[in-house]
Image 1 (cartoon, chains in turn brown, yellow):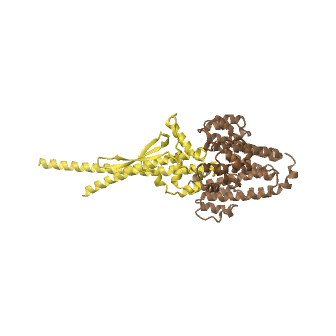
Image 2 (cartoon, rainbow over the protein chains, first blue to last red):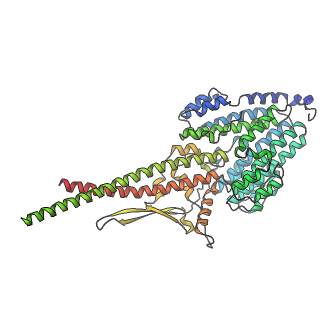
Image 3 (cartoon, rainbow over the protein chains, first blue to last red):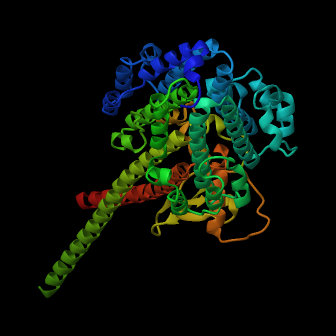
Length: 340
Length: 226
């Protein structure tokens, strides 16, 4: 339909596509979620997860468990799978897989910089970093006083370097500057990833453009909702939106002036794909990601979709664990996104 | 004869008044006990709500955005403080009275009833395993609780806007350790913990009233038995 991927894709990508489809089959099912939602303690959750692919990662954890331990170990599994795929991948798939982790890299940079601003120990901050976003010189971030130094000392040699051109200033780092830096970096990253996928062409470009457009739109909505009532001006808010997506550009203009959630809802309801899923944006994304597995073959979208689905699954596990630990099982279904 | 009857009448009136006073003290004690238990229940549900909202915020924003490692360790003035004063109950006794001064660094503190000794030194030594589970680091309950209440001391050079606006600004400032653009759920959690703190102070006040009433009842019982 898109090109002649069927003829050439399997030469370099066939093995890994088979691997990732196998990984996808290991995602938790509705029955698994039903069992987990009925657990009384975190040890019950561990027992139920021992029958899944997370079993080997949790089996040696002593009681009493913490919710963070469950999340850490499940994340380790994702990291192991990702590393296996990355080491087997050739270009351009290897670059594509690396792109998937740049978001975590940005989060880690902001975590280290914010923590250093608050006089926290660097080792403590490094322990909180997401493993998929680690790079060699990350600890050196703690010495930077402003964004120019941040770039010059550390980030110039990382994949995030090209994204810094829009936010290099000599202003000292403070909470507002860091927030703007975070969102500006993420905007530049999404746009770069989008362009990279367009360059790849074929089914990958088609499917990834939909997935990344959804990501950009969801980000725009989150920025809007989270900035309501804050000091962020309308112009600053508009600058943080990505330059692509279904909401670009007219939806962004309307979102920029929203002052409450009802106005945001009103904007979103003008776009048919978002009419029914505004209240369940996460579920909508899961549906799109799942489509990437079923609707087409021979494209890189399956790798992106798998990573996102696993991350959503880990978030689900975190929420279920928190509800169980806090004895609030009646609230479990508030935030669990049933992926299948 | 008439005088005997009069004396008997006066004695009966005196006993009646004593009984009335005893009943009053007893009623006040039971009222304060009821209020105390009600407030304890309210505190428990407010705290549960706060913790769940915090977990919800963490679920929405991600573990790297909300965790104990981001709390500010720089020296700064607490935005909320407690004042303890003595309140005269009657001419013989006084009892401590606790007053909460919220967002005091904005110089527009909201006040709620109650007084207590300084909060920070006592609570710094408490630990809460639920907290460490949620924010994934062994931070004491008080330290985490304090972050919601503390903010960097700032000069407010002009007093623009109503006090409520300044209080909102202080609330946002307090949350800014997690970033400027935070989830509404985190703001809800902050409000829940703020309400919980107010309830705690009310509980402390009611506790002193209850103890005072109990002593009164006890005294009356001893007088009766004596």
